Amino acid sequence: MRALLANMGFVLQISGIFMVFPIILSFVDNEIVATVGLFITATIFLILGFLFNAFSERRTLSYKSSCGLIVLVFILLSLIGSLPYMYINFSNGDVIQNISDSVFESASGFTTTGFSVMPNLSALPKSIIFYRALTQFIGGVGIVLVMLSFFYPEAKLQDFARGMGFSKDQKIKKTFLLIIITYCAYTAIMFILSLLLGYHDVVNAISFVFSAISTGGFAPINDMTSVATAFPMNAILVITMIFGAANFFVIAGLFKGRLKSFIASETSVFLVMAVFAIGVAVIFFGLSTADAIFHIISAMSTTGFSYLSVVNFSEGFKFFLIFLMLIGGASFSTAGGIKIYRFILMFKASQKAVHESITGKEFPVKLFGREYPNSAVNQAGVVVFLMVGIVFFSAFVVSSYGYPLVNALFETTSAAATTGLSTGIITPSLNVELKWLFVLLMILGRIEILPVLIIFSKIKDQPSESKTKTTTMTGQASESNQVTKQFICPSCGHLVTYKGRPGENLSITCPSCGTKGKITIQKTTQHDT
Image (tube, rainbow, N blue to C red; front, top):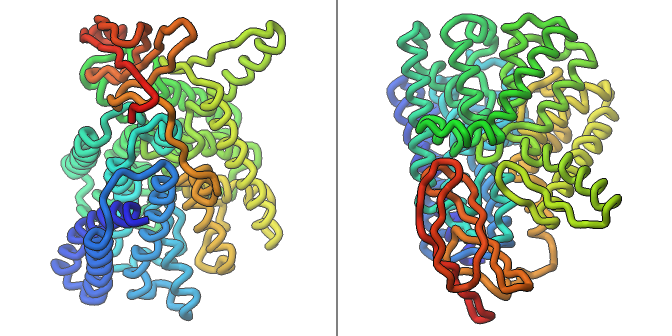
């Protein structure tokens, strides 16, 4: 517990530092009420962060504690982050409504969902609008990366890290700063382009870009039609949403000319699916090409921007969007959903089941340059099953309040996939208990369901009998004393598999980029840690 609090303290301190930017804006615009609310929030973040750090022990977290950390982070961020909204009381209701609406808006931001119960955005201070957009960036890019720098990259963390958008095999402590800087660079480039190409509202421009790159979906204005249908913002938002939903390492490699890695990746699958989905929307559902591009990318990237009335879509198109939102974007991105690799993995698992039933022989599951063991395939299946189950169960609960079942299913899928597209159920007048249900769905969708089950499990972390000292190698000895290991190429991120005997020196060449290096297969004993 002490180690968990120490890591939690660091996360809260980073959040408090981010609060400086909206506080400065509130001073500049002389928004006194907003300044007080933001200052109180920043103070609480920093004080709690300092106390957790000062009186706790910093050491490596176990896998179970790591899951507990990520769950508590989003709960605490949602609660503390709601204070500025409570202070300005945007709902103008009683205490219960004020607390519920404020926590809902905060959770929607930090989980990058984009649902909103604010009745009139134009009545809000500019600094609150900016803070609202910033929460998406914190939740989608910054905080999760900083938090994962504390995770011990053991083998059990690999699939969980991929599901959250991070690869266990990457040296997280050395790369998280690069990733944050890169996402900030994406944001700065798109923001500057929007200004240079003619969109001159500075706060709204940065808010839109924050929402798009984090696939959050908070719009800083009540009606975004004029923005999303006119150049330059229509193009900038679509491009930025694609960046947000794409695998970070694949995009970084593409800029370095590594086309082969891009083609054999989730990101290329995302783009192919997007083109197909846009064609379906135009041909079968009657959308214009521009409308189809914007709304299909918005749904697939789980951003949630929309200028058309979703409630007026046909039920067939709603089901189509439900399918796209549920799949979501690529791993190691800010997008939600079950992730493309899990979606394809389910097809691979079906192929494996058929092959093994007929032949009785083991069928390896390979995807994007990686071979998945049975445990990884099973875990992916459990995550998909739980996600679908919770979405449908919640839809029945929402429909019991008199809402059409299709609209309820659309809304709960949008919440669990952290998308934010709405059929009109999410409004300021929504029942308080349903608001809290959607808060739960948004947090579960962001952290995924498996970590919650893990932290409540009575099973204790079991140390493995044999662990290698290097964090970028994984392997398993075969009966013939051969060891199969994998490592991530430091140049392009491609997963390379090789075999050898313990203690053997091997020369390795990356098949993707041609980078050469030497590998020593480390000897493992029962006493290795």
